[in-house]
Length: 363
Image (cartoon, rainbow, N blue to C red; front, side, top):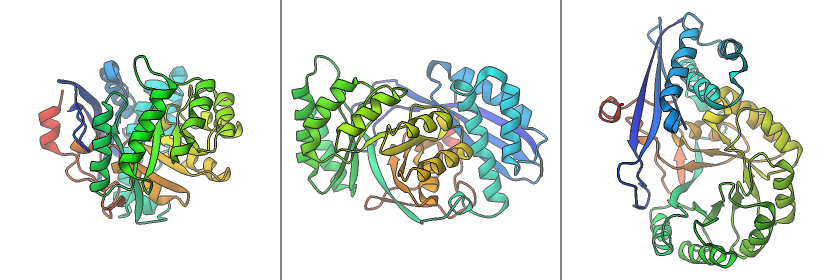
């Protein structure tokens, strides 16, 4: 089997908040690059990447350029193709647009492999479970009013979510007291039986993370996420050592090597892997293997339609972030039922692009 052609398209989806009806910015979009890789066997694989923002056009061009180099290759020899593309990119990696573009191709290759072997991705790479926990994300954003997030939290519980994530490091003239009060209100709204995570998005320094982190320990958070700058491994380690609340991190780093530094420094208690920043499924699995060697659980960032396979495949997969920003790209996606996602049993990713959506939102 050989790769014969590729096709890419920019898709600009509405930037709404679908889980609890949060306020949206009029006209705002989330921009994706959709990829289709064809073969002479008639098997087609799909891939997706994003984070391009204003550079989404450049990201699509990078996917096109790397994809052209894969034409003629055997799609089942994934490491061969990945090595070829890395070599061709020269000094453009290991992070940035190169890795984001490589991820789309790598995802599509695994989709082809699953279809060729008539196996869903989850079974192809481990097959540990058929269902996994999932948490609601994006409905309790720091920019939403306190009244809204309290109501949204109750709505999520009523809709069956057992886990959900809020944000602290509030915008504007904030204070530790405001931060603690927001955590209190949301915890009271969702109840003690709900696993409540909290994302800081690198907005605190080490002193703030330890100080405020200690004050919110009374609300029994499931984890505090990205408490300080993502590459401040000693700083994160200080926070993790000082707090009883587990510290999660990893979504902001590119490739596998930063995870080695993070793990060696004992910077996190929970390893969060972003599929497109990691470099695709191939690198995601290698990072997950490192985490297992350190006896640490793994959680995902975005793309729940694909991450459901990966978290379910490994024994130390903890939970899937359910932030369905990409759901409109596909005809059918796994949806939460009583706080869990069921792994698709169709070959490969078990996904098909929604052609009507690609046409409607295509750029």
